[in-house]
Every structure is written in C-alpha cells, then in structure tokens.
Image 1 (cartoon, rainbow, N blue to C red):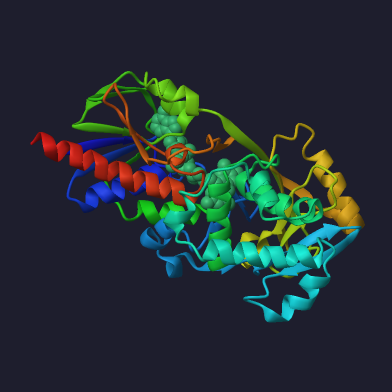
Image 2: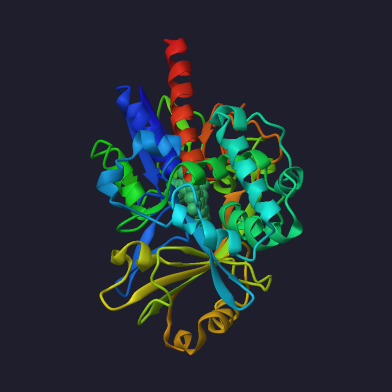
Length: 412
Ligand SMILES: Cc1cc2nc3c(=O)[nH]c(=O)nc-3n(C[C@H](O)[C@H](O)[C@H](O)COP(=O)(O)OP(=O)(O)OC[C@H]3O[C@@H](n4cnc5c(N)ncnc54)[C@H](O)[C@@H]3O)c2cc1C
C-alpha cells in the first residue's frame, strides 16, 4: 500500500513511523523546510529559540513510547516553581521529590495551609486513578474543578491559574478539567524537560526514524481528495489513502470535510525571547507571575535548564503570555524591569512570537477519537482530534495510522 501524509508535525511523523513499521510505503509532504510544525527551534545570534515556550512532560505515554530520551539529553526544570508576588520571589517546591522544599512551600504566600492540604488531596485523587479513568471523569471548566476541590480564590489566583494558564493557554480556566487533571498527573509523575539542544530535536529524532526518501520537505499541498493530492505548483499524485496531518484550520481549507470548521477555534500565545549578559537567577525553576498584574504569565531562563540554549557568557530568557499581546515586547519588558531592575535594560530582544493558532480549543466532553475519516474519504489526524499537546499529536498520528491500515486491509 502507498499512503500520502500531508504535514510533518508530530502527528504526521508519528503516523508515518507507524505505517512504515507495518511495512507500507509512505510519503510525508511538508511545506516547511524542517519537520516538527509547532515544535521547532531556530538559532538566533547563537541562542536556541523554540517556537514559543514549550516543554516536554516526560511521563507522556506516547513520548515514552516513541522518543529516545537519552539521545535527546533531556534537561529538567526543578520540580515546583518560583512565584513573583508582593514584589518578591518565593519558591513552591514539590515536597514529594524535594523534601527540603517543604517549609519554603508551606510559608509561601500563595494560599492558606488548608489550600495546601487540598492540593495534597487533589494529588492523591488524580494519582490514585488510571490515566484512562481521568479521561472519562465528568468534564467541567477547570475553574469549576478547582472550586469542587475547595480551593480558595487566593491559591487559584496566585498559583493554579498561572500554572495551568501557561499549559492550556487559557487564562479564563474554561478548558476541560479532564485535560487539566491529565496534565497535573504528568507534572506530578514525571519531569518538565527540554532536549539539551532545543525542542526541535524531538521532531529531528522522529524524522530520523523514517526511510530516507519518505519525508519531502518544501512540498506545499494545495488540495486534497481521498485519492490524490494537488501541490501548489499544480502537479498531482495518487495514493491508496491520504492522511491530512496539518493543523485544523489548514486541514479545513485543503479539503471540503464538513466536520472541521467547527473544530477550527484557537487559543493564542505570545513569547518574547531575550539575550542577557547574565541570568537574573541561576536555579532551573519556572517563574510564575502571581502578582495579579498583566501581562506576563511565566518566565523561563532556558540556559539555566540547558546551557546549550545560550552562547558562553550569555543567558537565553523567554517570557510568555497565554494570549495575543499587541504591545509586546514593550509591555513585557517593562514588567521585567519591575521584577529584575535595571539589568533588564541590557537585555536584547531576540524574537517576538505572536502565535495566534497555538492550541486548538476543545468542547467540554470531547471524546478525543484521535482520527477522523471524513465523509469525503479523506483521513485526518492532529492534536485537535486528541488533546492539544505533544502527547495528543503523537497519539493521534498513531491511532489514525492503525485505522487506515484496518480499513485498507478490509478492502483486500
Ligand atoms: C506556543 C506553543 C506552546 C506549546 N506548549 C506545549 C507544551 O509545553 N507541551 C506540550 O505538550 N504541547 C505544547 N504545545 C502543543 C503542541 O506543540 C501541539 O499540540 C503539537 O505540536 C501539534 O502537532 P500537530 O502535528 O498536530 O500539528 P502541527 O505541529 O501544526 O503540524 C502540522 C504540519 O503541517 C504542515 N503543513 C501545513 N500546511 C501544509 C500544506 N499545505 N502542505 C504541506 N504541509 C503543510 C505544517 O508546516 C506543520 O509542519 C504548544 C504549542 C504551541 C504553539
């Protein structure tokens, strides 16, 4: 069988790996000059700059299945985080992994002692369930989930909102509680990490699992039907099946699948990357904004996590906002001056990233089938059919490949 895949993001790559492993011939047509889609890195003035601030949660089941973590030389954030609140920095540790952080955590001004015991109860409740069970629990807006666990407004505003807004890119906390609980489980069980040489290494490693001729970079597809692709230059190619692994908005444009327009809604994010002569702090913590003042959500000194993110004697810093910030980088830089003082005036902006299509929105109760076989005969995969994450994209690609093979084998 010969199968065409449009898009070499993580979903398309995972599908291609599965199809080739089952002995089929595959071509992956990718419009960009590198694979990875939304997971990519560039070098700017010797600094590694990822496509937005992204992390790999090492307990993602699909990532564990497909990726060689040793070869990626994963570098971990310290469990827990730093918070900026009342003009000071505070540490919230993970006392299960760093018992010495317990007192600092209890004393941090983020919530009452009662809130901290509620956090332990939430941890027990989530880790006591299997991942499959988490995905069939009642699906509520995340803010309602926090209310049901009995958290005070203080801990939600100071800690839970900045933490989960940074991950779900939804500052309003309306995102699915199932996704939030799944993410909480991943945070609690594994590490938050980046490959030593940037997030783009994830895609590089996946693409190296494919046969040399499989991946066709710089190949922009203009139209897709169940049996043929039309490229931007007007040429066409036929295959036994076609899997569209682009983002949902592009998938909708390339095909006339009626199911897609309803799924093509997005959360945006803005990231500003800086080169600094030295880091404002040296520990490998993620810093969350608990001050209640916009716009920054989080700051990561990426070169504290992996030195290779910056040239010698420099630091690479990324400040992120889970929405589109028109006045970035000025508003972000001004807030960094408030936090870190005049040293920020020596920081140089490396990149300003307005990513309007970052995470696809999902309706509450969405079943996450992983694939779509449209009435027009075209197959689809991507994070919008699973959950908006590295794990979701990889899972979707694998499931779609299996479904295509089942369907094709039933025809022979
Ligand atoms: C800023 C940001 C931060 C994120 N943070 C995290 C995080 O910390 N942790 C996490 O787990 N997830 C995170 N995510 C989510 C994760 O990156 C995505 O869910 C995942 O990468 C989506 O993969 P995909 O393969 O479904 O789609 P995409 O990555 O969008 O891949 C689609 C591919 O199709 C290609 N394509 C498009 N049109 C055409 C065409 N006409 N012809 C040929 N090719 C085409 C594109 O170039 C692209 O390579 C983040 C996403 C963003 C944007």
